[in-house]
Image 1 (cartoon, rainbow, N blue to C red):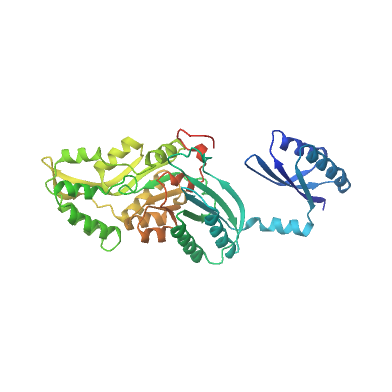
Image 2: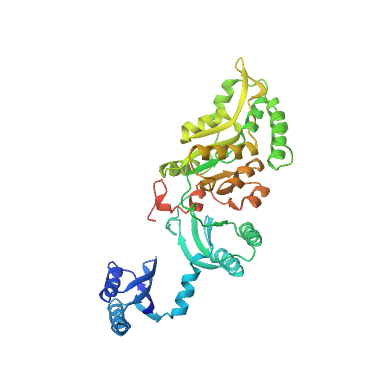
Length: 410
């Protein structure tokens, strides 16, 4: 085996640095077996695993690298790598890898340390850490701060269920969101995002707002809360609530759509995902008159929701067609994926209630958004500390790729 060395170069970054050192390696016909680089606050850490074809050239190469480093005021470390050690590294290439994303309004050393400790306790290795959020000023902070880092870890966890439980505990105690899922061929190749509507895309439960207009707000809200906690069957609760809306005018429905507040980040996440080529769907136990409004406003490709029966310009208290409950949402997600000629592994589902769990569970990536406790526990991935645009970070999208007017430099 030829001589293998690990070269580590650290110090102040500058233009032409990579070109200089890799050109030196090229003079000795070196093969690059691995290479990695990170720059933090204008300081670089460059690592190169190199194979030197002629062992006798090692001393000269070593001298040239050290001399170049000295001229650029850089620290250079060159270590030989034994053949057995190298082969073990090659054999480890098939290890499982997982993506862990930390997201919040800010990140502290304590939060990151707690997550890193759980990773260590599960016999996993952190291979890479990347900042996804942009730079922000301490003197003139932005009104809407986001802080996010993504970790790539390798190895087989000792106990995945226990690991998730500890991440949930850290999330509750420190106020950050922690996403944890397996990295596979589909992780960077999602194609379809399905959103729940009420309390996900919009900051309201439409049926409760309609109930207020009908003067039955308290009765309907009590049934809604019970259904979202999973205490009663969704279809049964839905029929009971719709029956109480009898007599509402269609004009009142149309006026309501103009007052419903979008969830924080909803416009940004839809605009960005559409710009990146994703298909967007609304799968809702709410109503079509709101879904159609959002389709036009936010650019959704599919809308499936419940249609209120209307006669002579007034709500009859009945529903047209099949009621869309949790199981139907999952069924529709599968149908849309088939229509788009993609696999379920390429889909994402986002929701807040118990009736969203079936589609969250069958999607390639399921996300609970400001959700009830039962949903956060079962979803595995949650956004609770920031707006709906937090989904972009969970997908590994860097802030510079996000479709918005950036403040400062990323």
